[in-house]
Image 1 (cartoon, rainbow, N blue to C red):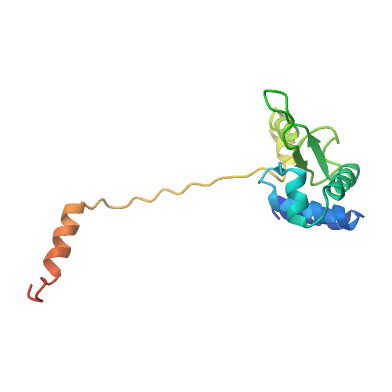
Image 2: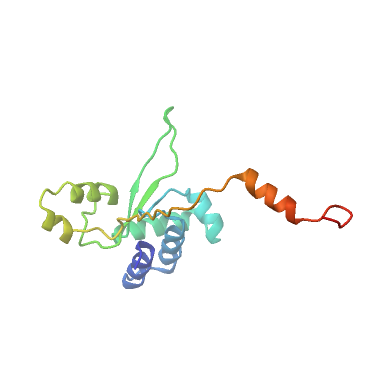
Length: 157
């Protein structure tokens, strides 16, 4: 199961209000592979067809339930930007005050290989690469072959 599926299952397992469930599904839909997103409250309200105050209450509900951690962000000049939201798959695996990224860094710093294997994070992604040897064909040879087969404008080769 991928991380978004686990987040959806977590929403179903929590006893959330309707507003919190709606906002949780919106955040899951907007989250990246690491479970983070940063939509503004006005954007959430507009796209979910609810008021900004209802969004704020829903975010408070989700934070109290341990489903998300909010991080305030600010411009260099001091103005506030949209919050950064960390969606949490399981409350037991992580501390409430520690975002998902920090937990993953701690897991990766374990020196004991067997311990690190047992603490694999669901959000970790793995990449595989495949190399295929293809013969190189020159463009000039392909063009000459195509031109030799195709008829002229009057139909005569």
